[in-house]
Image 1 (cartoon, rainbow, N blue to C red):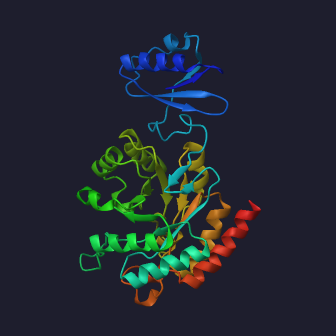
Image 2: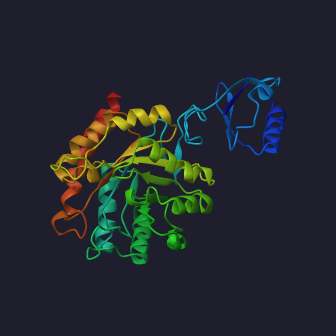
Image 3: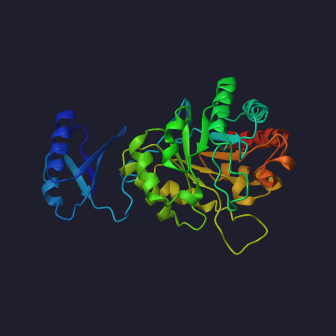
Length: 333
């Protein structure tokens, strides 16, 4: 349920209405925009009489919401959310580029790549310390040592760090991480989503599952937000289809749909979506033109010898050219 308040509603009136809702076991979430104040009601509203609320002097109107996601719903929060990633904003017209290797392999590699992507215009550094791999024999990441090297690259360049959390037991190791990524395979790991939602207010980069619908993605975001963390960034990284020419099928249409349904920022990962470094440039430019709030691109200093996903990783030189094209598209938009 959405309660829109009349213009000029005072703080005391808002607090009084919030207390009334709490007595009915409803959690009120207040959003104050430039033109109006909205209260979103989270909880079981089956026994809440809309007429009782609408009769209050401070209330303009009451609207029931049909969608199962509440906190992520644009009706709750009409303006775009801007997520602050340690000084790098994402959303609401602030475009972010997250770049770096699939996995951290050495100090020389991660620091060198961090310097290169920053010079090209990246605003955040990505790098995997813990890697979910289809094969148990594949490189699983450097773990805690990888996080230490990411922190070193952060100190060297000033770029905020984005890396994936696979198991909540490792959360204490993520103190110097700026954005916690929840990967596609964990998008519906609801216990993990609830734990990161309750434990931290750090931004959560939530990747769409390889076969997930948009409602399922938004409901996963809802788990994080309902647990207490409103700072969620949605990520489209391609879905599994019958096509075999690419690793996945990049679904750029979701950018428009998600922006219509939700106030959360939407970033696109053309590297995992295509699986081919030569495709990343065109798909990154297309995503920027389609209105994405940001990109996450894999960049490696020596892709043929990468321990993970070298085929889809751009070289620093390729990334620099892609950034030039992205900035031209952004300037036109």
